[in-house]
Length: 330
Ligand SMILES: Cc1cc2nc3c(=O)[nH]c(=O)nc-3n(C[C@H](O)[C@H](O)[C@H](O)COP(=O)(O)OP(=O)(O)OC[C@H]3O[C@@H](n4cnc5c(N)ncnc54)[C@H](O)[C@@H]3O)c2cc1C
Image 1: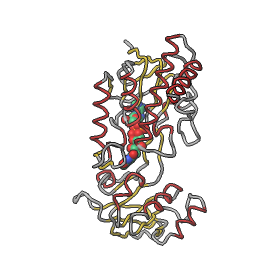
Image 2 (image 1 turned 30 degrees about the vertical axis):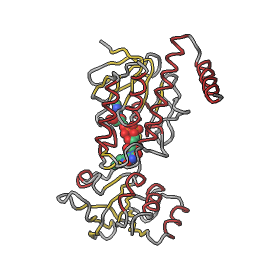
Image 3 (image 1 turned 180 degrees about the horizontal axis):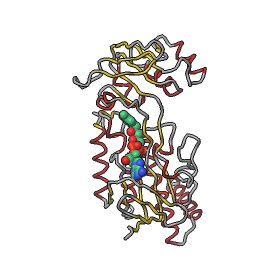
Image 4 (image 1 turned 60 degrees about the vertical axis):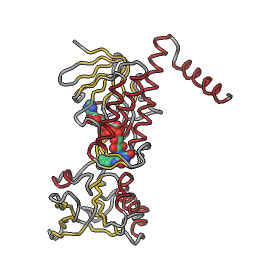
């Protein structure tokens, strides 16, 4: 028999779990379809030092466990599975996992975006131990260190420039001799004394898995086939992100890069909201994901209330504006 829900959340990263906390505390008894990466991207990193509230920092998996417990405490239900298909053509929306069919009045899409990785075993083993996919998140850990950035797009060069604030040297490794990045970014990076370039080159391996830290990077020149080993303290993989939106293609409006188009957190389908990295190509931080998760839960709650109480959404927004104005006037 199908599970019947007022509010269902797809994804259990910062966005999904924050949405769950808000929805559960509004007595909406939310269901979270966690996906196969329960806890989301932060579960593959170590120290998180920029999530407010943790002056000493917190380990990524521990932070996500705390958010999970907080959501559970207020009555969130969890399913550990992927959503395999959705039907957003009418309400209630239909979500299918391998074992369940869920009918839901509102749907919050928080399926995130995965950093594209090189696919090396050493890369996954050293992720959070010198290998990173996020300079904004981890740059600070590389003060006076030697780092490499892999990639040739705008993001790679932006990350390289950002890392020069901390590292003594930043080497950009790119598999072609031309950059995909804009000419102005390339020019800016070339002018920076700390940035070096190794072109026509791919990463063969990252050392040292046995030691549990990055000590070097093995590179292969695609033209000469020469393999060289370079001392390194950190490797930043900046070859792009892939939003997890395949499931929604042709049912909801997506950007040309596959991110969900949102107005606030509203999507092109009435009753479907999106939060976190799945709709955010720019900031991609745990706290911005949590913020939009909160907003998505509130929007869904207000929509459900307006439908239950016969109050139009416009009426609800108007009432909310009035409440805020009253609070501000004292
Ligand atoms: C190595 C690394 C280090 C980072 N460090 C920091 C940091 O220090 N500070 C910081 O602020 N940010 C950091 N980030 C970025 C941060 O992790 C993301 O911005 C944040 O996790 C986004 O949260 P989200 O909820 O939008 O998505 P995600 O965390 O990506 O979660 C997506 C969720 O969706 C689920 N899912 C996917 N497909 C489906 C499906 N079909 N059905 C159901 N569920 C599905 C997944 O299982 C997962 O639970 C880091 C990222 C990486 C990769």
